[in-house]
Length: 99
Image (cartoon, rainbow, N blue to C red; front, side):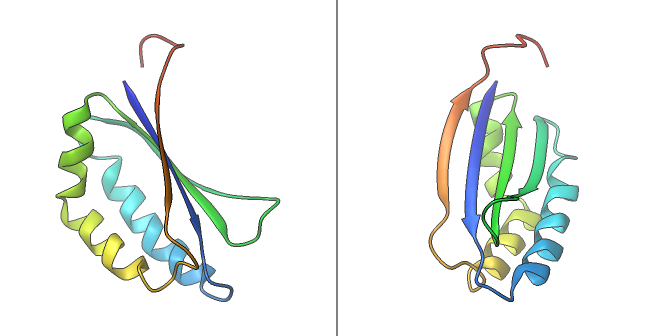
């Protein structure tokens, strides 16, 4: 199992647009065969800060996700909404062992 955390800072005033586009990506991503979780989170402490929590069954699923139309659409449409580049971290799930 592979987990990615993707943190994004949105330009003030662009939050609603970002959320609409990101919900579309989330709703379609979770339908992908080897995606276990694909959550969109908003920070309570940092206005305009969002995170995707993504859990994949395989490393290949991560690359396959980047080739989907919904990801490409999201990536293109959010490019002008971000205040700075996305921050990405990859994690491995230790427990629970099976998801």
